Length: 251
Figure (cartoon, rainbow, N blue to C red):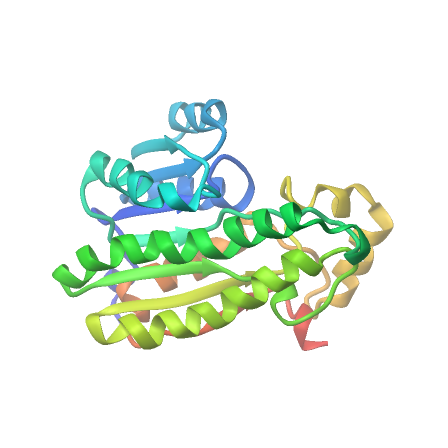
């Protein structure tokens, strides 16, 4: 396979959850690979900082993806920067970290809306344009909790289990139109969302010991998997969940 198969230059990419953590790192990486990147998150100040510190062709949209009835308008605002979106990366996430006894209907709905519903309806918004060009990518973010139960993670786990199945269903619906739909399930990476995990040194060491490789993830470990799923290199891969977890789920 030629090196050009691993290329996203000139593609228009939308990355949600791009104000921090995994989303921000991916958005910067893809911009540095020559893509036109639109970063989406709630925090406009953090997005402005990202634009100022990232090379390449970039823009941002400050929006609350939890407002599902506004997804269409948000999608139009995203496309207004560089045109129709070729690649959608749904990296926005919310984890209330509450015991099952403490979860309220509000906590539950907010988590489902951000982690699951927004990903579907934003993809649905961009699919017609991808179909018209006969090529597109949807990359969702699943989780270790898509398949394993963690303490204080019932709402998050339910949403991420949904992401795994939604990814397969997206592939069934849209891949005949030239749009591949896959997901990445990260292990433990240092982000705002996992700060409590990494603040506990003993817990961080235990998580590292659970992997086959013997360490927790570094954000750079996600670059290759994202490039593979976003580029022509993965033209015949769809409906899959790639666990980027150092072998955590293998043990």
